Image (cartoon, rainbow, N blue to C red; front, side):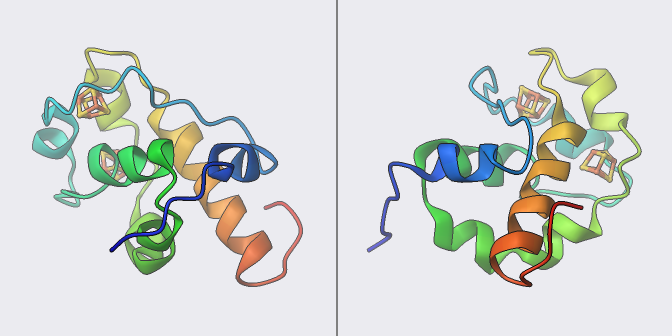
Length: 103
Ligand code: SF4
Ligand code: SF4
């Protein structure tokens, strides 16, 4: 069973801005992503919002494979700032897993 960290959003916010509350899981981001990202952003952002930290850490490779091309963001009907969120998740992983300061 997944462990929920109720302070996870606060924890990742120390690495930058993160807001995916408006995501409605429509799948447009996946459809336009040149990397065919199925998990990111719609599933991993949801895990982050509800505090399932282990899923974020489990999918570090996916988070770092994003090209930051903004194709998803430019087509997102909910206006989710996808690349900013990805940057924040990377900063969180760099800080907590690799012991690096904000990147
Ligand atoms: S396109 Fe936007 S609203 Fe749709 S799933 Fe992706 S992030 Fe969520
Ligand atoms: S910014 Fe990342 S997730 Fe979005 S379309 Fe580009 S590669 Fe895919």
